[in-house]
Length: 136
Image (cartoon, rainbow, N blue to C red):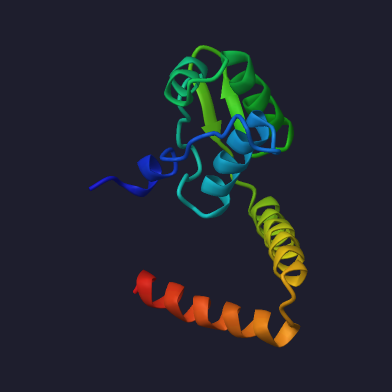
């Protein structure tokens, strides 16, 4: 069985998606940090390793790591690689920002399908119950 740290890398990129590849990779790593799959000080895959795993240009990974470093989620040590940097306030803010972004996207889509607020709330409650039982 894989541990949590390995599982976060089980994502793939969709080159045909509307979301740019670098943004897909950045979101996946950021999610792994915010969801505690990656912990303070955990070493990230090297630029070359991650680009080979995802079959994308190494320059894309350089861009992702650079942006995550500028955003304060990771730091680099010359010759050693990139590591997770946790700032509790940044994590808290990041989680709420992600909640807001995902909620907006979800609500926008299901509203277009004609669902009411009551329908949406009922669906969320049902899924929260299911998700909570899976974690137990």
